[in-house]
Amino acid sequence: VTARKSSYRSLTSLARDLSRCRDCLEEGFPLFSLPVRAPLAVPRQRAYLFGQAPGPLEGVERLPWRGSAGQRLREWLQLGEREFYATFYCASVTRCDPGRAPKRGDRTPRKRERELCAPWREWELRLLRPQLIVTVGGLALRNLLGFPKLTPHIGERYSHEGATLIPLPHTSGASDWVNRPGNAERLERALALIREERARL
Ligand code: SF4
Image (cartoon, rainbow, N blue to C red; front, side, top):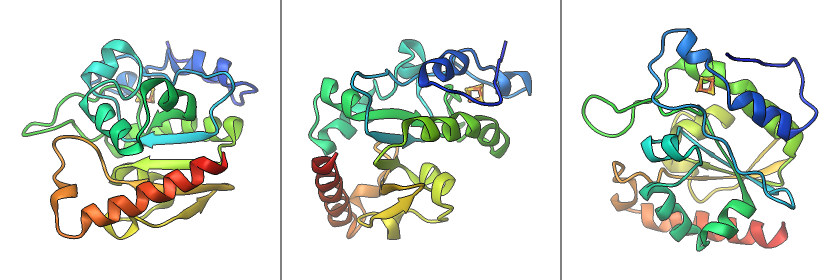
């Protein structure tokens, strides 16, 4: 049963309530996992990674970025697993596996699901106060900065709630974004910016 407080004083109590959230299911949306939670690191992560939604493997393990998209992301960032989870508090637009799309890839969470999940993100950002935010994919970027398109923003640096925000494309194998003309160079610029920001954390 979902339990949400009107305010949270720690990420631990937030994570406890988030792990039991069933709001979307109670409104009739199909979900294929319980919420996937960010592993809390000691010392606390200084960067916030914001993706679209977990996939089936993440849903089973209840840990973010476990599948091939996560492996590709770590390759891009040149980080091993331990350093990746110690650097980034991993979150997403919605936190439960939304199931597969009828043709290919994962189902995109509906507007109402995104609204129901947004308070978890808002509280995380308030409590974590990250110095760096990295969005992964168009939906994550649109949710935070409202940009309707992804490509013009890859390789650029923005600011959000006191943090530097750097967008990345989605790492899913279902996306051919990287192979389109000019995009490999955009991605290289974005990864160089992230390396630069990480060096300052
Ligand atoms: S997607 Fe978010 S709001 Fe919906 S049930 Fe999962 S944790 Fe709750």
